[in-house]
Length: 328
Image 1 (cartoon, rainbow, N blue to C red):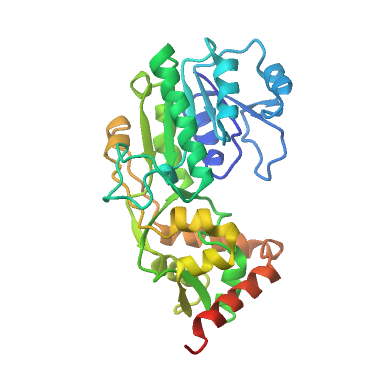
Image 2 (image 1 turned 90 degrees about the vertical axis):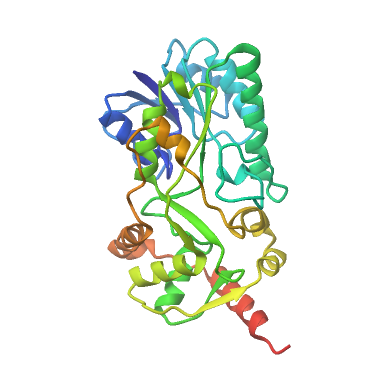
């Protein structure tokens, strides 16, 4: 089976690419060759800029695929180009959407694939919804073979699960307080990218997946306090000093975080994975975040140059804590 990944070296796709190769897939990667994550040995590299139509078309000229996966489409103009380029040239077009597209906050939990798509807080999510709507129209009107996959918060060993990244770990190790949004009690789902890959790759070329949407997440639910404490334990600190600051306050003081906070992380977000388990019999997410956090800290500690403290983020943590703790 010949498959094209548009992207293929990102946080999620960097696990899917080697797993696809191990599964016997003839894998092509189309990207600009600028990712910090190297392409896996055995993948065929097509160098081109998917945002440059001429470059994109030249890179895939004369090729047909059993499946094409676009990991990096963020607007309807991006997916229109895919639809045009691969019309009649692929047996399946897979769009990587986002679980943040679901109704926010959800009216009921756990979230199902049938949960409405509606996120008034985050433009990123609304763009994903618009792409999904365009693809479903293509499926209905011309039987374009589309599949939609919605990851939630998926990580690899390089990705800490909170804003401000290593700066937060540095503060924890120095015994300084760190900000947790809200009351720290909302439930969240973190999925290891290798768990995601084992469910995702079997969808490629599966005729039963055409016209369908799936989310792929772990079944482990953690509070945000749990998440911070798990990272702290992996960093060798058993009892971090957590300070809860209302999400609305953080969004007001840091406007760039409004979408990802009020439109995503503030709300409890847990999922029913029955549909993907029916599609991929025997699949379960098996990597708990406690083990994932150990991988992350080991990666950072293996090379101190990765441990970059951002002075602005550090100052912002202090400012939010001072605001929260000031006398009424």
